[in-house]
Amino acid sequence: MNKRGEQAEALAADFLRGKGLRITARNYRSRYGEIDLIAREGATVVFVEVRSRASDAYGGAAASITAGKREKLLKTARHYLAGITPLPQCRFDAVLITGEPPRIEWIRNAIED
Image (cartoon, rainbow, N blue to C red; front, top):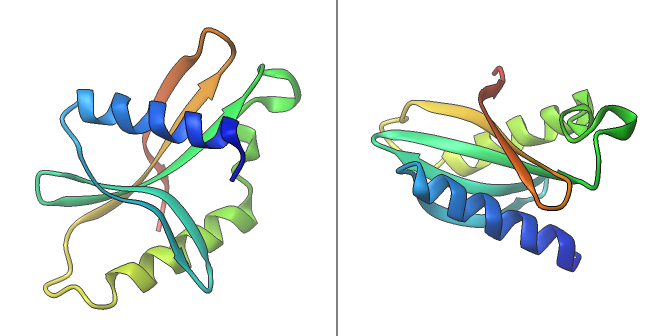
């Protein structure tokens, strides 16, 4: 991962902690892909995709979460959950970071399973 990506993930993690979430994993990898952050909000497991862009040109950060990326996230989340019983409530959020100084947008339930 490049330095900009690391900084964006650290900023997103700090932002989510400030909103009361507890970060439980960073850069979770499986053969299917990677999940940037995994957090807990109460009993809910929150899978977080962090996207950073210098500007909103070309659709901005949200437009960069393609159908292929969503599929990889879902498969990777299923892999993560495979050993957890009982299965917890889950959701997929996105933290979008744009510009300098950074503007942060948190989208809950950004990806439907």
